[in-house]
Length: 231
Image (cartoon, rainbow, N blue to C red; front, top):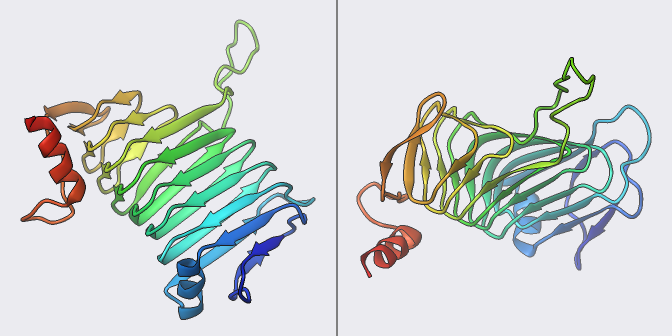
């Protein structure tokens, strides 16, 4: 595996076999954070044999603990500038995980099997969040003998989405800009922008809302959404 850096590579925890056309690209900020010990990055090959091929990893995170396990080829992981936090990511099949700039996590687990996860900028994930971008195991139609849940799927979040503690997002979920998913909610399907969704299954309980990282003041995106709404 190639490490794309102008300077000497920092200490990285790479486990298993990756072919030479796989690479890790670290930003200067990520490079410095790894050297300082404020960012821990673990890259694993979890298949029992053979090299992982054409793996693309781009890390622009500034702190946290990121563990990524690859079980296929042609896979991609991307962390945007200013992202930080704790992530456990497991990819199999043709999968990808794209974490937007300034997104933070207190403890997120992401599973992708022939699927993808894509989130926008400035999202906030609480602890014990589960992102299940695919079913992982087959559902068989007994009339036809066919597997009915193995098509490619993605979980997609817009900008400035807040996922509450212990919530779960299932395959093909979409959440719009500025929305909030409450603690313990289980989400499938589409949640529109700037709403609060809660429950099992999640339903919209309040519309025309967004959120701020500060309890008593607005942050940049919540102020922008307010300005847009009041025009």
